Length: 269
Image (cartoon, rainbow, N blue to C red; front, side, top):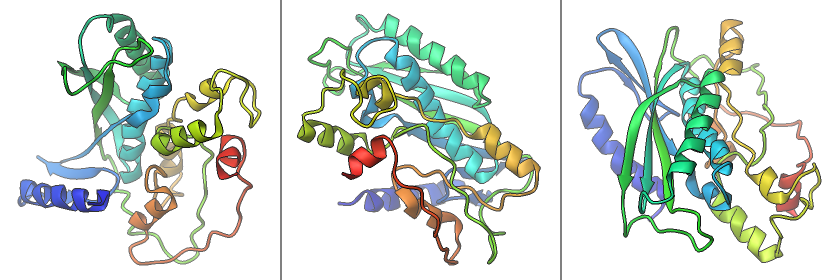
């Protein structure tokens, strides 16, 4: 079964749950009208990127990834990120406290970038579901739910029209998607993650791959405030096909490509 089929099966429940409350569904985040307030909701995790983290300090960046994967979706519908609820699942609580402290520090870093305040969450101990790693790092998974408020118009792409220009914003690296595939390529190439990155840029391959996901809320807010944006797309697991979510049947021409640089060039080769 494909991921799309799983999403479709879950989406049928979401449609029933909204009832007669207006909602924007099937976009980067859902928007619901609750008592006249338009509330945007998103949920996401870090995926398998955390398997490259080797110590507590690495998880400070992982926490930024967790917030970014949610807040970057919120701003794609024109929402202002307000709150984040985290969910930390562990095999056992033993030895997790230093990692939790680093995660909290990462949450504070993300808050300072306008990604919303982490106001609470849940720690679940799930032996048999979460497994400890062979390298001694506690087994854990980090995910979150994000809440935002749409103060102006919902940014759903309805205003996209011929003549609009598509602008790509550079990433800070691989962000937090595709790491299962990436780890396969790393293994196939026999890459030493703790040696200098073969694609250049300074630092080890591991440190570069653990670069936190760039937070886009303030950038998108600035563009929206200037009245210059008709739509925004978060290029995550679906890659460039994510652009289709905001086209509403229109097409586009992507005619100015930068050569894949850094790790992307290495992965391409």
